[in-house]
Figure 1 (cartoon, rainbow, N blue to C red):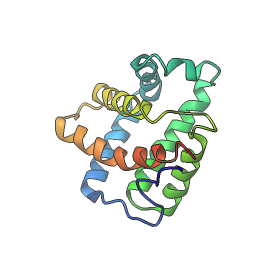
Figure 2: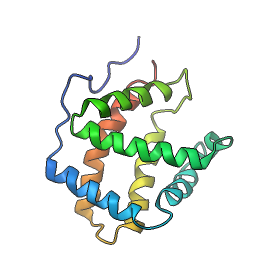
Figure 3: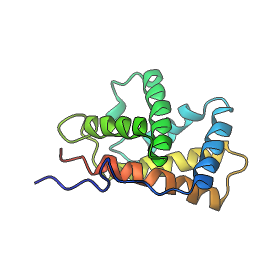
Figure 4: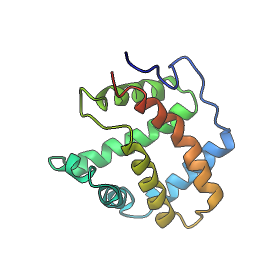
Amino acid sequence: MAAEPALKLNEQVTINPKTLRAVESSYARCLNKNGFLNRFYEIFMASHPDVKPRFAHTDISAQIQLLRHGLMSVFMFAENNPIGQKALTRIRGTHQRTNINIPPMLYQYWTDSLIKTVSEFDGQFSADLERSWRQVIQPATDYIKSGYEG
C-alpha cells in the first residue's frame, strides 16, 4: 500500500509571506550572477555517489531549464498557487519509483546542494536566510517524496 502524501493538493502550505519573499529575492540575486544553476549541478553531482550516474545521459542545458521551472513551482507551491501545486504533482509523478526512480533519500542532497550553491552566490546569505530557504523547500520536497511508491 502506498504511503499517504505528506500534503494533499487541497491542503494549504503555511509559509510566512515575508519568508517566501526573502527566498525569492535571494534566488533573484543568485540568478543575477553567471553560472548559478550550473554550479548547483556541479555541487549536487558531487554530493552523493548515486547522483552523478542519474545524469549520465542528460542534456544539462535542458535540465537547467527544468530546474529553473521547478524552483519557480516550489515558490508557487509555497504560496498555495494551483499552478505550483499542479507542477509539483507532475514532478512527483515523474520522480516516482516506476518512472525516473529518484529515491527519497536523495532529496536531502538536492536541498543541501542548493543551499550550498546559494551560500556561494548570494552575498546576503546568512543563517536566517538558510532557514528560510529550508522552510520554503521542505513542504515541496516532502510532497514529491511522498509519491515515490506511486
